[in-house]
Length: 548
Image 1 (cartoon, rainbow, N blue to C red):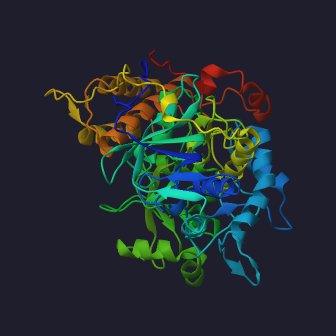
Image 2 (cartoon, rainbow, N blue to C red):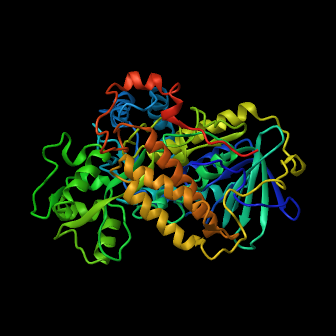
Image 3 (cartoon, one colour):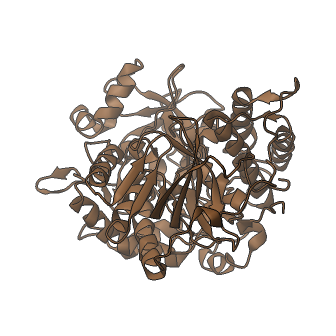
């Protein structure tokens, strides 16, 4: 990756409509909305969302949210499972915070109106891959994310201290001459005009980057925008090589890669090959091994033929009760899971890395915080434990508010304090129209195909070097117009390059990062590696220089 310019495109301070609040939250998934609700107890809050307030990865979450609330379970067991799944790169401190404070946050979430499934008068819990206990709360069978998003949106809309703006695309972060982050430059999708949103504290909760890959379970909005704007502003990114590929996504021609929840396997479904044989039997944990192991197992089996997920061992009654949305969706595409196996394949699902933060969501930039999938505090390590993602957004979103409260000085920034961008240059050429340049529409597919084939489930140095070279070349060929589609594509290019560089740096296989040319881990001890993680900047962090 070359020198990274400060702003995605040239702009002028004149003619920008300016808004002010105490806390600015960018994103409307579980992390963003929960943070906004908690912050509204003390502050005036603004929430900006790229499309509609309900559109996020949270809404698409099926399996559930993990919390050690059962008498047979404990935060200690939850911690052990998380550390084991993280393949030696979890930060034990942040994991301890997650599993202990998570129980309280889930109870608070229920107090905000989220209604989880009950059985015989008690919360219905299920088990997912790499969990030693049943600790997954779910709602409406397999629509947990939808129910959580519904409850949080309702709470936000009934809270007068929170203002929400839909159809707002964040182009870049704003800073003052001291280098503090004091807001965001935003494109109003309704008017096509620029807005400046200023605040004492800015929280990035912009979600993931699944759309960087050809095949993903993520919605169209997941283009890595928050990570890209943070990187351009000079923030550290961390663990970008660790992309989680969900083992089971729908594989039917002309159908989206619809997520088939891990909870299906947790309830007893089998993975079978074209011959009808279970091929995960020889693996410790079988179908419920860690996600990276199952995804690679399916990927390798697909070299011999199709792979299927057989729901039938669960039983018809339980399937309809537990997975009504999955059942209806599959039936829509011609597969009745009550009577026949479902063709599946891995797909890009979750980013374990992201904007480097501490346990209070603080980034390397003053007054900038990050939470949820766009952030990386070490809690997921090299491979996220199933259903820890929603919990992550709650726990560390809440901790951000504690830190903002401690440091709030009451003095709002003003527009005149924004660093002048007049002399800045776009990293990607804007406003030119050379015949050899790529349109962003064609470039987006090029990026997705390249990332899938060279920086996907299996990687090697030759393929990664090819990806790095092409991504660098494309930086000079992009035709960038002032539109959301083009800005998204530019962000995908930047983030794709960051993932590729990190994957080249890590010359070992660990968790979601598998190098066929370096198939073994360098260090099998999570205790030792965790102590090294803060000193090992070359492998653990990406530092990208910014032009003056």
